[in-house]
Figure 1 (cartoon, rainbow over the protein chains, first blue to last red):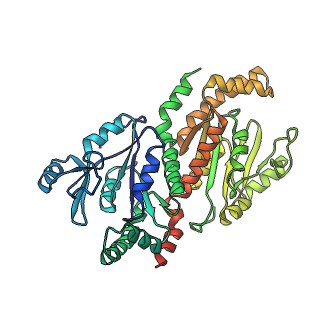
Figure 2: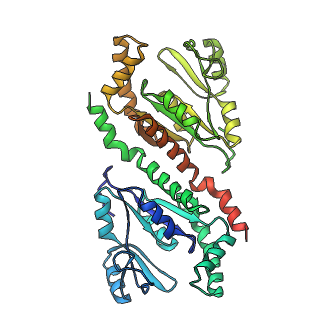
Figure 3: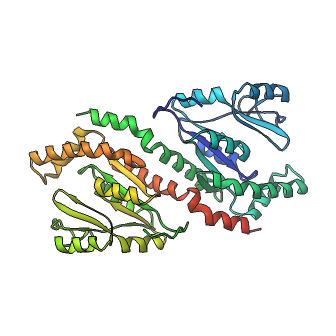
Length: 208
Length: 208
């Protein structure tokens, strides 16, 4: 991360949560609602799913390209998840933050932990399902996976939920609109913390 | 404060700000909007102003009564401000917090600092005027004080604003509805922090 401590710099927001909890749909609702809010586009070695667009959904790379970029230190974090690599481009991220934009990283818990350890004032949010039963139902509905894969994903989810204690905030995706609005409240509240308001306070005191 | 660490316990919220910034009007807007949100009623040795009601606006005491209660350790904080004592009743406060209610203390910065030093997870919010000019205008409009008193209050405000760095959050009261909504967002976001969500997470993990 950049070392410049500027109260005008944007917030870095990490959003993680159980696979199938609905992070993608929540983020669609969140992103349209604040104009200075951007989504970081990750590198991945996963093959594109139908409808996914290069540079919009992901930067799709093969493994050797991915590992070269990672080894040069050009990723904030990277991790292997379900057999594929995922990573966050560092330069693009810093550019957005320095413009004053708040940037959301949607990443799994392994990557989330790396960011939480590296970036002191990161706004980390963990999204939970209302229940494990409901999570199983949502995974079945997506019908992307077999029943065996779904069972494995639920087991993995339980492990992941146990890591939610590393996150600053926890939201429950029972109703998607409410969940999106809770995430927006967290972001708005974080921008009102003293260090981010410093330059405004100085302006007020100058204006006599 | 109580030592019981319970994720179901309410939030303690301290709101301070320059005299004349409009804290009273903001709080009226905030209090009606969440059902588990209460206002702590302070002790004071100040004489009641017109329309002020005992036990609703303040507990009005004479100086010897006030100092006796304070010396017994039955106030969370107390301070002398503009020649009068003000203090926060400890027992009533703990009762509300233990019921799970979020409690707002509207106190000046001397008392605010005491609470910030004593209560680790206090949600402290400082309310600023949009400018010192605007603050002077608001103080003149109230017409409670002479011009000399107003000048003194502005000087005091500048001192107080310099203490806003001790507070977690800073809001600017330019538009009262926006300011009230920012305070509500802060309170809502604080209830989504991990320690307060712990019991809900445990419920989700149990429900298999």
